[in-house]
Amino acid sequence: MISTFLVEERIRQLRKQHNLSQDELAQLAGISSNYMGQIERGEKCPTLDVFLQISLALNVSPVELINDCDSMPATIYTPELNKVIQLLRTYSCSELNEVYKVLSSISKIKQPM
Image (tube, rainbow, N blue to C red; front, side, top):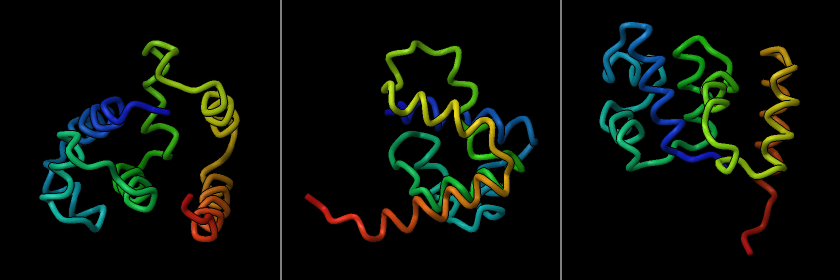
């Protein structure tokens, strides 16, 4: 599993690179500025939908939001997740969108245990 700390730091880093305030990024992503602040502080973990909205607002692929994690210790990833990330890096944005649709469908039918 990816540490949420890495994701929140990456979102903050990219937001600052784009010279955006939390309010501006929240507005672009279609979420409240309060929620954006909670995400960046690690108080809330964004849903997959919100994660994708943030990546679109920052004009980066979803993989790029976690791409900087390569420099972090390997223990942050499970071996399975690492394989998935490596594969996703080879996909175009439109292909990633299709993968997202499939994962969303699976998520909707998955029964809680």
